[in-house]
Image (cartoon, rainbow, N blue to C red; front, side):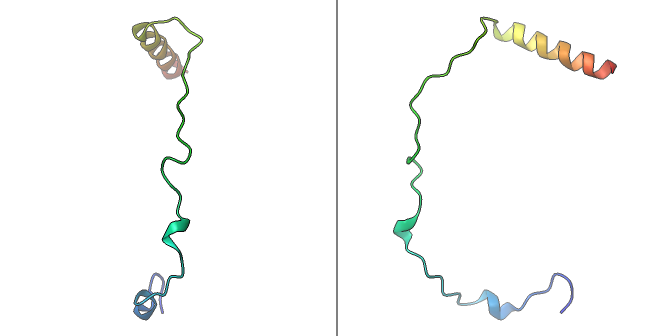
Length: 60
């Protein structure tokens, strides 16, 4: 068999031995906390700072 080839018989009738109850629930690690930031800057001020950083990177 060449590179990337496969035996189609391996792709048929696979006997998977697993229990569906063993899965992970999506809400198992739900977080109901709060997010806080150490800055009182507005969104516009933060975007201006980001643009300044990008501009200084372009000059380098």
